[in-house]
Amino acid sequence: MSARIGDLLRTPALKVFLLTFDGTFGGRAVVQAFLDTRRDYIKNWISNFESAILIASDRSLTELRDTIRQKFPTGLFMIIELDLMKIDGWMPENIWEFISSPKPTKPTSLPGATKVIDLPANPSGKKQT
Image (cartoon, rainbow, N blue to C red):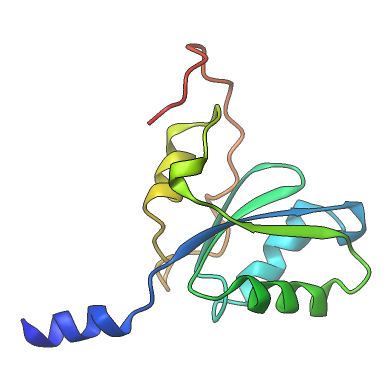
């Protein structure tokens, strides 16, 4: 069991970032395809918006910014590290799960295969947890 604890201590915790980008990026599918090529930086992602993607990563804001800027040098974007205690809104439950408990994708999963979600609004109007 001590080996497992040691492995956990060496594994950096995943943080969740919100990436928003303008039209010069070429659209959400182009950005998602890029994210799938950078598994060293991007451990997982989920998207419910045309120009915004939630990213799970163990890297810093600066590292992510530099990686994105290298691929999209003329695009305008923001990347924001999310703080679960300072976020609220109206999103499907799987978005809140991704934010509260980010996990890397399994190596055998197809990149981006089931991560784009387009669900109807929550009829109750309340934050789904």
